[in-house]
Length: 494
Image (cartoon, rainbow, N blue to C red; front, side, top):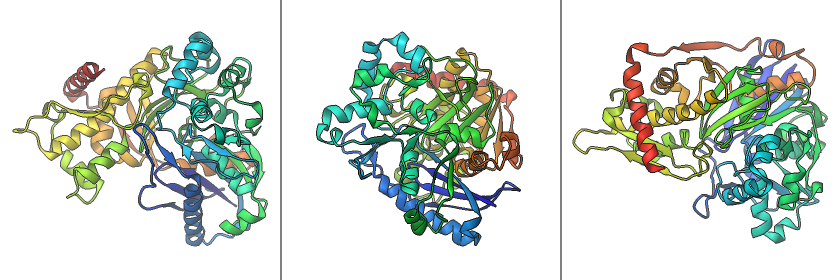
């Protein structure tokens, strides 16, 4: 028996096939090999065509099935995870009405700010656990005001994973976790927020049927089975946004457990068991994958938009003579802790929630033409990203989170020894790296959804810890000095 996981990212779509009994990865692949295009027709905008996700899913899926040689009849469950907060609109025939407004698009910030004030800050925070901010509900409000001819044609609204499930099954559904990440869910009344939809003028008919995070949500249709080489009727048995799912992938289910990622954007994600929130909405609180009204499990999410995208930008525009990220890390390692006084503020990928939705952009601070080299810039970039994590983790600590151990996948920026050692030393936390990713986690979760695994302990019993990074206490002063310098420069920009 096998399980499939689909991870719909903004850079690529990854597909993973695991053998259910052993929990081992049989094959995985991603498409495209170069990052998917993000369209930005105006500053602060970011859109993608959902059909590109589907095309690349088919390519990666075909590769995985060919590599594995597995019979489609032996695949018993499909799990889906996705880039959070994106808005997809379809008409009554399930045709796309416009490109998706994705997570890093900041055009809806003024709409969310006005809603926060008008609905009432205390009411928003106590019921939604967040400001409406720049999330999916506010993106939909932007469409209503600026593209009324499209708004009139809407039959259903979705998040990216819901769209993929629709393409797989022909059925449209949404989870409570998905509604919460869109800022549509009222946690006190356990229903779609009347305050939000009444304020924005969103018809309740726009919302699909609510389906469980774990369970048979839909099955693969005959047409999708023919496109993908799957068996008609294969259950879609799990779906969740990428950050709750990445936490799941690292077996983070319970209060006090912490997960982190560092891809295009970066995240620190911790689990709470009480309805809590940051009063300034700088970090956000959503339903975790195992949330129920009876068993509160919430994910507190610190998101830094300008993470791996900064490293990618440097590689494509600054370090063009270096052939790989490994080469960049090697050159950066020649620079000392603190990058000889150089600081990079990494917030160049739209409005940052941790900065209360301000756009301060990316900047190099303290550069000296006589002493600084390319390696110093590359190290300062990684340090700047880590320092933005620590800046946000201070907010999480003030909410009562005790950050002692951070679990992460051995991927993206966690492949860099500079990045992970700086993060461990600045935060005073031990970092545990695991051989997993979002697609593998979604596949294992699909096994929970079809009932093959009794619980999360059984589903993640094969999760392999591959490295432990501990703080460099003898260099703590150097790390903190660099962090305080970075923070003072950020404060001047703010």
